Length: 265
Image (spheres, rainbow, N blue to C red):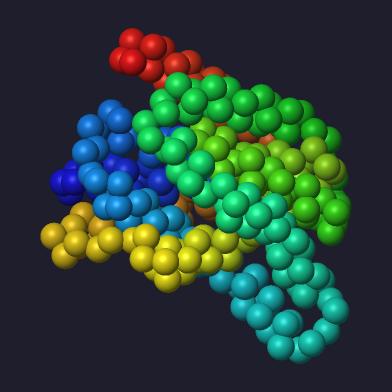
């Protein structure tokens, strides 16, 4: 993979991890368009590095929240921050169960399934449209809602279903304040990403080639910087109820993907 492709895919990951348009779906579309011929292990390594970059950008944006949460945990008090940690853990349960039991089946879906990505983007568009029409509230995420949002996150393992779109939409439709929904959505994915990376390293699924160091580094930087921009922007957009624009975008890209797949079987 050359430097230009690494930059393009890094920017795609950084933007689409936070914008509700499916990072996994766009990465698959990007690889297909750019003609990515990496062997599966190298492609996985690149994808993991990009996800690691966006996880770090999330931690930078929410550094004050994360610091407060850790401070609260060590105070051993059942306050709002401690409850947030437990809610995040609860939200992880569905994704951990699905990921652990169906990892190989999910991996097969990420093998150039452009048509599937297209149809899943249409579903993402529908969820975003519903969420944008939801009434404004000032409610926090409850423990019950955290589990339901976790189910939405597990469903978003399918390529083309936006993780942020699915979780924010589920949260808002359950009556959560839109800004708080976005905050919870971005924080809840961080431990999952680091957990997945740790698992891949321990099981030896990741293969590192010194020749790919430059492309990995360039991709990481591109994803990290674009992730910082997208995360900040997305919080503002959710608060102002601008998700319909992304719904339209997902419909357009989804239809293009379906047509492209039909013309290039």
